Image (tube, rainbow, N blue to C red; front, side, top):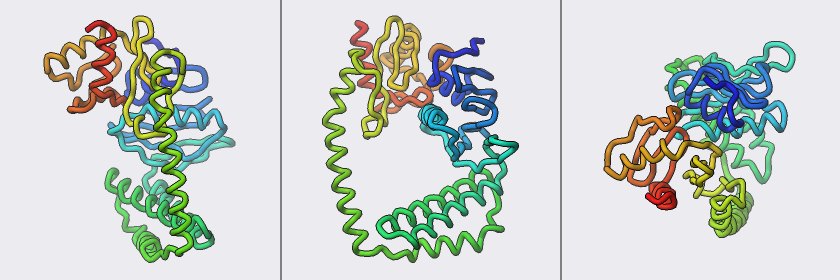
Length: 295
């Protein structure tokens, strides 16, 4: 078993797919179901049961924030991710808590704090109120997922829900929201216009990254690097292993559950895309690469 992996992306993917019991690259490493930044003092996330992850809300440094982003992007799309309260044990130690009561309490505290901000705020009042509502929905989903009784929280939950439901939106704020949405729409149109050029550069190896803040990045893209295929999430797999899947797809055989390089599992194969681990790859993208390889 190779425990020193190629880069942070590979560490995150090995952890989220539980390919092996441990692995590391530079300052990011995992042991069993937990992944860490820099050391055991900062836990980023825990896999608490199949397809369910508790993810820290804390940050330690800009580097740790970068590690968190890499880890989150590596988590398969069908997994459930819940924010987690943090247990402090000793100076500077941040541990993802698995205590259900602590996490439910944390969600309601977040909602309450946001509603307090909404009362004091001017332009962003509705934003705070809607985010508070989102925390209440997390509270409900968490309680259902872990089968936790919410009876001790009933009074506070109902008070917060009533406050949110009766929250009034000032007319000036509605005008403010419209202007922000208009500006956002213009910015998104500009991004989409440039995106195909960015993708072309990445495929031609003249660009090292793709802007993943636009809808096109709901899917992942491929390019050929030597004897390997590299994804836009910086994961590499052998061409030989990928071609085995390609041939089965061409013969309309089921590939669900198949392994690529004995590491990445095919989770789903819809009419539009193939899902492998956290990757969703359009069939048109797979066909383009196969054509490039002469198949």
